[in-house]
Amino acid sequence: MSLAIELHWHRNGPAFEPGAYSAEHTVSYNPHHDVLVDAAPDWGGKVENTNPEQALASALSSCHMMTFLALCAKAGWPVASYHDYAEAHLGKNPQGQMSVTRIDLNPVIRFDTGFSVDEATLKEMQHRAHRYCFIANTLADFVEINIF
Image (cartoon, rainbow, N blue to C red; front, side, top):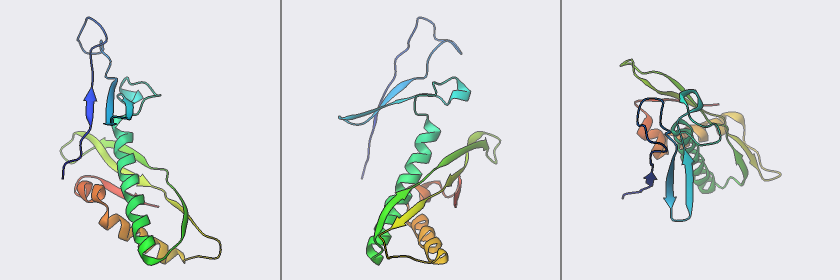
């Protein structure tokens, strides 16, 4: 199975030199959804644009949530809402290169009124979701993933 995006960039001025061009570009996820992407603000990008590090955190958070919801539906847990604050952390990898070294997920789950699970059971379901998440499995050897 292949899942694709299209990326479009063009130079915004006559010079193509370090610091003299914009990294702003468009990523098309499908014919109806384009996202402006740029370098992170610390690297000269615009704060109002998505950056690749945020997109990576988003991909992990979304995959984890969808896996968690599938497991809860199968278990008969009536999830009413799911909120996450995902944060990617930059640092040096074991080879000394800059990389995303850690992504923290902070999911908050609400269930239908009258339904509850204890914290240990909920935590175990989160860990199961992590084990089955495609993106987490892709990053497993490279990025530390913390679920709070």
